[in-house]
Amino acid sequence: MSEDLMHADELEVVNDEPFFAPASADMVDGLLGEYRAMRAKVERVAAVMNGPDLAGALHYFAEYAGRNDRHLSSHTVEKLFDLDGAIAHLNAAFWSKAMHLTDVLDVMPQARRDAWHKQIQNPLGEKKDRYSAEWIVEPIPEFNEDNVRSTLTALLTQRETFFAERVDGIFRSLSKTHVTNAPEGFNRRMIIANCVDQWGYVGHSRVGVINDLRCVIARFMGREEPKYDATGGVVRYARERRGEWISVDGGAIRIRCYLVGTAHLEVHPDMAWRLNCVLAQLYPLAIPSQFRERPKKRLKAFQMIGRPLPFAVLARLGALEQAWDLKPNAGFRENNRVTVPGCYDFRYGEREASEQVRAETGRVLAALGGTPVSERRWAFDYNPLEVIKEIVASGCVPDQKAHQFYPTPEKLARIAVDLAEVKDGHAVLEPSAGIGGLADLLPADRTTCVEISPLHCKVLEAKGYMVRNFDFLAWTDATVARFDRIVMNPPFSDGRWQAHTEHAAGMLTPGGRLVAILPASAKNRMSLTGLDCQWHGPYDNEFAGTSVSVVILVAVGAKVAPKPAQASPRDEPAPAPVKASGSTRKAPRAAQVAPDGPQDEPEALQDLEPAGEGQNCLF
Image 1 (tube, rainbow, N blue to C red):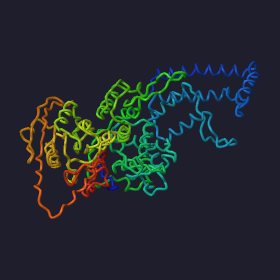
Image 2 (cartoon, helix red, strand yellow):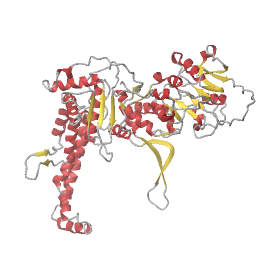
Image 3 (cartoon, rainbow, N blue to C red):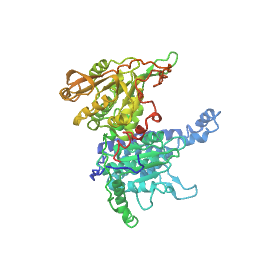
């Protein structure tokens, strides 16, 4: 695929006012009451410990505790009960609580968040040096009613300023050493340096700038904005797949990370233009006219295959982890953590999750093949964590309407596999495999799955199947592979089932057997030349969420009769057996099941672009 991105023809842009949740008066009053009570306790402790009755005695406690610790002394005790320092840190703690009463941290640009966090970490302030009167970090203000209410009110009134500040902060954070970044304005491709350090730790300030970009584009498109800490996991995932473009937020952005820690970002040209329009309002004389003109070139449209999920759902999915239970540990106070195989838990964020978020999360996990064990625990027959990482990064799952993905019910799958009569040594194919509803009942070491969705391919790979990430119809035209058994549940819409079934029939070996789950109307319309066709069913209301009736086609090819033996002046050696997937089974035809690995594919198949490239995005 070309490095130049191909984007959607049009994007729906909504410029509605962002929702901003103010803190209720009752919550502020309660917080102020809690602060006053805690401050009184701090002052009482300091008065007692620093009073004349105990001051001399504390010295001996410090000497004893520090006899083997050169860092602990009586000076440490004096600092421990320093009233000014304790009150300053108390103020910082309650200012942090006050900020979290609203979504103000999510609305703030990253530069303001950085300044705020520095004040929280240095509540007494920080000067340039011990002799200077210049503050690098201003002391945090007193936590009293006037300051709290005036600060929160000011932040509420500045929300539109925050939006422009975000755009300005993104532009100022672009790497100055990469020529991709233009000094005159935004391009559709941007580079931000130092997002990840050499040990793999995320630079939260730099990653926060990427989060700001996600927030701005989400607002342009009328979506809710992600939380201020939502992008660290996405960058970590992109670094794990460094050098590869990762689609983010349903294709609104693409990101590619490198080992040196730089992040390359790519957005739609219309988005770059809108960013420049905001920048031009801040610096009207500094942005050249060409950066303020809407792109004239109409690019080829690529439709997103996935509906972007709400950010709250993505956050909850990201909290799924390997399940473990606590078991008694004989002779020890602490219990043992014992891993529960095949199970995965939501360990945090459950209280904050609404019923809608829980329901949507459940639908996603069920689509990935999960089964609920309890409200917090899900069971899978493979490890889904890598697949979920990709969902959290891309922001979407394959759309049923686009992919016609309806998992095969277990009852129908068992009937179809029984009718296939798979024997030892048979090479098996499942086209349009989804997440392997049929393949799960077939021999994994001899089953090839073809699937258009990159996400579903990851599920199939995790289950141990040989996977080809292609559109099945394109793959059949390019590959020379042939199979003894083909079991399929093709897409039904627009008559696609017929084309898929006909292409699959052409991939049978002589005497091979094709079993296909088809709409009931196919019984009077489907005929496959050279194959003996039998019909089973109909089966009504088998697919969840649909009322479609289906039938099962069993098509068997004729076996090629062996040629009569002919006299020969000399005996010729028998052909050597052909190895396929680690076996020494003789090939029934010149071409066997597709070898494992792209280097073994036929030339025509190597020229095909995998279906996953560009599918999850607008490019």
